[in-house]
Image (cartoon, rainbow, N blue to C red; front, side):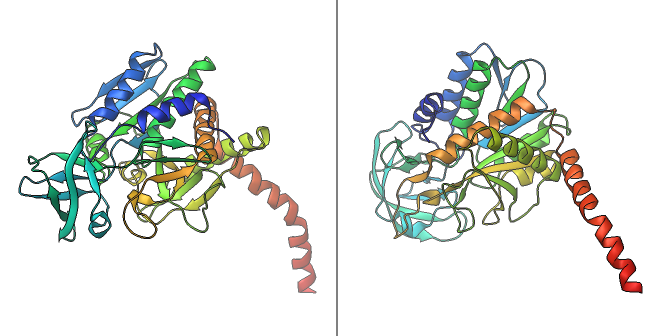
Length: 358
């Protein structure tokens, strides 16, 4: 399956943006350019720099949420750099670095200075001012059977939201749906925690968190996006999960090349935990990711990648759910299934119970 031209266009632009925790301006600028180009979109920024984009009129009852940062480094001004996010210091040793404007930083990551959080490494090369963000010097995005880039996590989800808006507009969708683009997730949900503490969004709003999660034997690449029932901290809203699965089942009946998986992805935690803890109806979708946080299988650093067909099916799923919401009733579908099972078994269950008493 090929990625749609609309999605690929968004991927090319978004995946080319260097980003780091607390330094997400280039990604946000790209999102705002998309908003300015569409009469159906509007945007607002909260006190912490989190960006909300809304398609259609009124206040949406459905939000897709993803983060706009990726693990990176930040110079301390004394010849070292702290690691912002989950990258292993030893894997970085010798890795060339770039500035956010795309220029070579003139420096490489050196020996580990400090383990733990935040870890730190020595910088080999040019002098960099305190607070200078640094990203890995890796080649740009490429497309084929896989989508590869320096930062698939979570920029592919950003592009997926923009592609979803494109497809809703092409279908002349009359409803309303939103996207929440948060900051500094990689250091511990900073942006999402700020958003839930200050937003006036009603707690009845449904939030679907979008993430990239390390592929595992039970969630291989190529079997489709994953309905993430929980992470290592939280089990997500059963009603939202049921609604998403009803949508996926209907989509699979219409499109034979649509595939999806369902699993507890407990290798880490995601922002859906924050939204559930704050009292929102929250669920999650994710893509199986390889080279998580740029760790190469045999050491060193390399680009992350996902399967192209998994990515395309994620956008299909999001678009279908947005169009069907709020008419989907996942609880009713679950009730009907359980009632069918009861009707199937109740007669034999009662008959064998009577026979056992004889």
